[in-house]
Image (cartoon, rainbow, N blue to C red; front, side, top):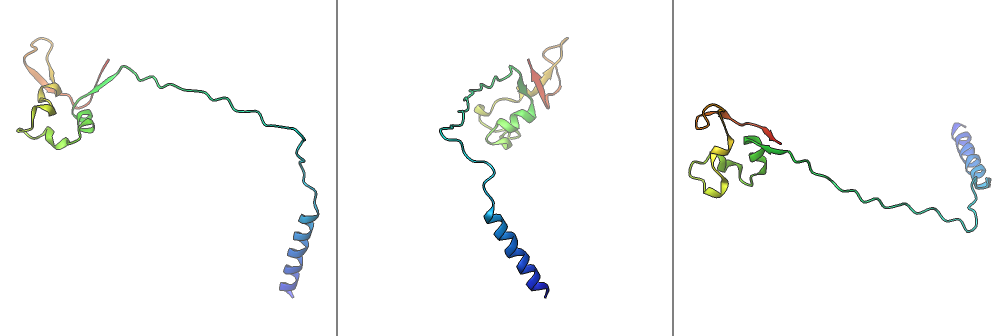
Length: 101
């Protein structure tokens, strides 16, 4: 009995949906407005990232940073050493991650 009642309600709901008129009728000769294309340009900041972490991400072979016999094209280790203000020849530490403006 439940199956007959459920199937009857489903048929009744489907028949009532087909009998309805469309709610919105399209207007004759109407065209939607065209969207304007906006070109955006990305301005890169003039901040230069430096340090060991930045060099690892930029390098195609990061293991060459710890290789003492690496070729010169991988750079020298002096670029990741911070120098003192009073004695520029004396290294004070490593630059792990730094910004240069």
